[in-house]
Length: 117
Image (cartoon, rainbow, N blue to C red; front, side, top):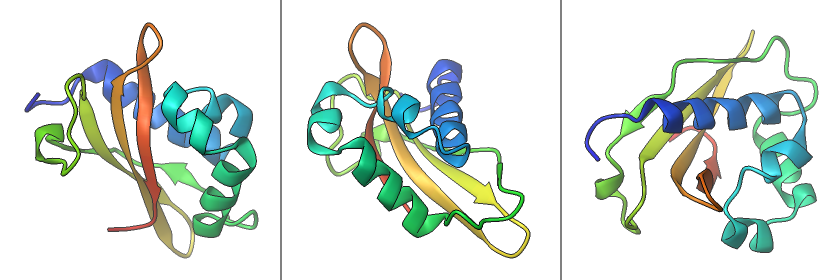
């Protein structure tokens, strides 16, 4: 896929929004079963908070940047989008990279990495 899929982009934004709202359980449920089995809710929260701490002021999700998932080193059939999702703040900005692919009967986050590139 060389162009962004609106449902995949919306999922990436929803995932980032849930994390920013500290709704870690709901965000965790958006991961593929494989990732859920290797990354607990507590670990997901810890990784996110290392990037975007609890005292982050006025966080906001900014427009994600689409990257062609076929360029991923570990690209898989069914990958629909590779997105960098910026998280703006008053003093600094951070972000996360997510890969959206096929999950249990729908779209899911199959990879997540926190921090600016």
